[in-house]
Image (cartoon, rainbow, N blue to C red; front, side, top):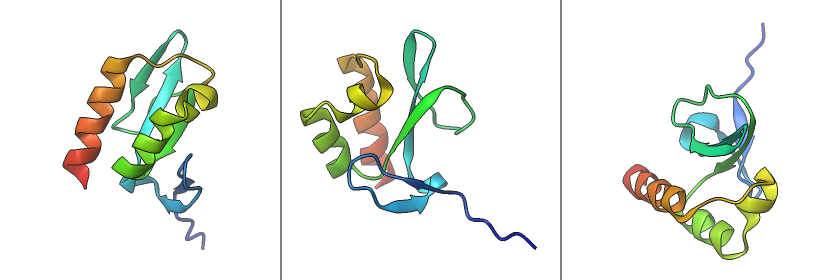
Length: 86
């Protein structure tokens, strides 16, 4: 029997969490989206909290992880989601 838990690593703090507790940001072709349903393909990253999100925006860790420039409107939307989740 396989009791595998869907855990993912936060790109900032490097701790493992259940996938459903994290915010996923994904790069699909030439755009970056917030993947609230965890079903979009493409390169993605996970953020665990508003604190890690702010650290990632300060040092541009998300831009490097996705190999793409993320605009400010996506940052604002992600921050709203994380504030609502926590």
